[in-house]
Image: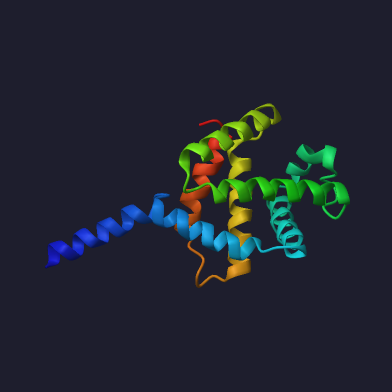
Length: 160
């Protein structure tokens, strides 16, 4: 009996650290709840980008073309909407790996010339997770599933 319990614990740890089928479904469900619809999406994007720039103020320089100096401008709000739209597509494709990989390759081609570092992707990942947790509540937010699945997405965008 002790062996079975130990095996189940090891299995739980193994599944918690991967973006497997159950984690992908959970992330999709939690994303749908957090991302919402309408004007709520714009507020959600504002929350995420405010946190990105709070943690990494120098990242604003990467967004000069879309007025990263002021996240309240129409240009930046439109950019934030496009970024979240792309993330929404990737999350929606988590359970269709071949199509997801095609989308990630497309995003990688768009981002390769922008010089985004791995650390900057980590900052955005963290801000997205904070945004989702803020929207759905800390009691249901699955940080392990989100970390594993966002790693799949950001690794793909980085061309890894």
